[in-house]
Structure formats: structure tokens, C-alpha cells
Image 1 (spheres, rainbow, N blue to C red):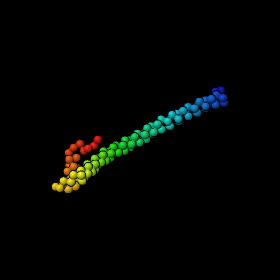
Image 2: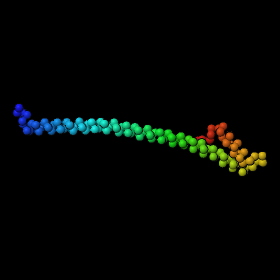
Image 3: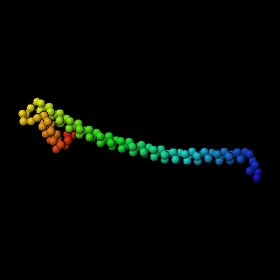
Image 4: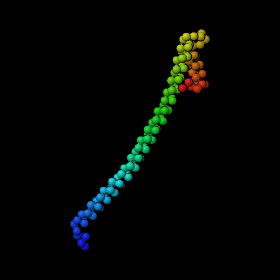
Length: 108
């Protein structure tokens, strides 16, 4: 009975209980916040990875396109320098592009 009415003992017990409550509250917020952050970061990583894959695919397509254009320009330049009477500029470019298609596509 004396302990139940002792103000200093009750104050010390109240401080102990309040500290425990603060620790539990902080622990639960940290635990859930960390999982939420992990999920958010995982989502950002997945999105970034998908974007990177799309860019790599775009780069591969652009390299192929660049290679085709380079082949066509080289064929046109050769045609202008040589000018075979039996061929037109279009024939020269089409022939070069057909040969390009049957090689490694000229991609380095």
C-alpha cells in the first residue's frame, strides 16, 4: 500500500513506462518505415532497370540504322567516283544495302 501511494516511486515507475513506450513507438515506426523504403527503392530500381534496357535496345537499333546509312553513303560516294554506265545511283545503293544485310550488319 505504501508503494502505491509513494509519489517518488510512482514517478520513477511512470518514467520507466514512458521510456519503454517511446522505444516501442520508435522501433515500430523504424521497422515499418524501413520496409516501406525498401519497397520504394526496389520499385525505383525496377523502373530504372526497365528504362536502361529500353535505352540499350534503342541504341542497338540506332547503331544498325547508322550502319545502314553509312553503307548507303559509301555506295553513293563510290558511284559518283566510278559511275558505271550500266548502273544507276539507286542500283548501287540497293546492291550495297543487300550486301550489308548478308554481313554482320557493320556494327562494331
